[in-house]
Image (cartoon, rainbow, N blue to C red; front, side, top):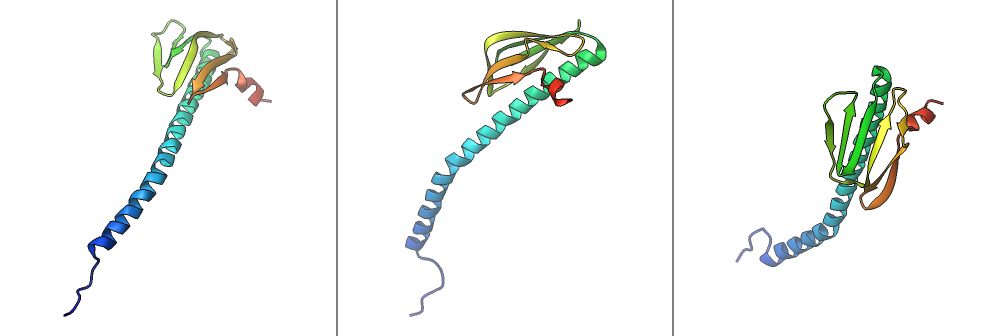
Length: 132
């Protein structure tokens, strides 16, 4: 009697068990990395938005008012309609109002927020130091 080439059911079950164990170990690490990457992306979008608003205030000679509350950043450039940036991983606590004058200077000079469970602050006039 010849034995046909192939795997037995036991061999296949062992391979599936090993693969399942690897996925169970690597899956949570991957999800955590992905969440951190998304939080970092939101931080960069927030930073770019605020820096762009400071530049526009200077370039157009119009003041900007920012309101940060909860997961929402709202701003008005001069007399224009309010614009909104909704965030998922950034939380502003407490609610804050920032004014950016026609020279691009923000008062107060920082926004306090929670990012991925950590307290952070966004320095709003940092572009002044970067130009040195």
